[in-house]
Length: 295
Image 1 (cartoon, rainbow, N blue to C red):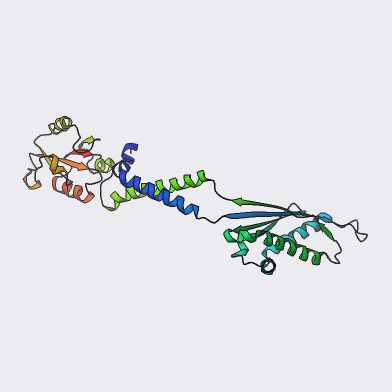
Image 2: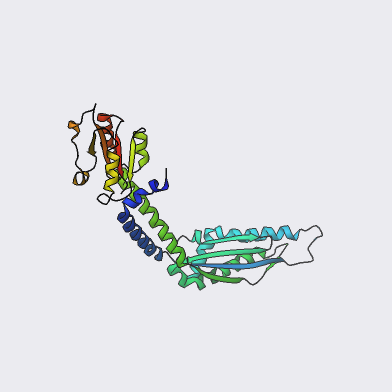
């Protein structure tokens, strides 16, 4: 199918396409502005073993440190840990489970990630302090009287506000607008049972002569139409859309002689219905001429 034929519904539904494009694009951009602001905080610290006279030559400090780092990372999944953090910070954090996470890097580094949104950001300092306090509290308890004690470095804290750049929001808005406008333009003709493409007519009338008119009805080349019509023996014009009778002298279908006359069908893509053209084929058969207006 030629690209000009494929995109012809967009040209015919130009104003609907433009209105929907603008409405959806501006609406999407306005909604994107309402997306919650997110502050991402990373808390980083390292563990190191404290050597004691109880160490033995076979004691694996690397493996032991890795297990300690895994244990500390697992506290982020503990509901009681999150409850203690919120209580100490004196705030309520909705869906806290999804906003607090931790992971081990190699065998000595631990990264905690905290994501707060909108009004929660105002309490971020208290929440961060509570997270560190609860980590230290549990670390001290876990480390107490341990055969392999550990020391924790001073946590490093980095916070950043995560927002999408304006150009990304504009691009996403335009993509949504183009998508909705394109779909609606095609659906308007498809759901209305209209013929949208020349390919359908070529498949329905494989042996018919077809003249395609790119200009709008009323601005077409009348001489070209006359030359095409005169190529048929006893041509009789048959309209398949309402506006055709305003520009052409049409013949009623019951006055056309099937043996001597040649029906020349006036078709307008986006207006002529599939049902109409199929009924005409059922009456006159496949031996017809076609004048197709693309706009």
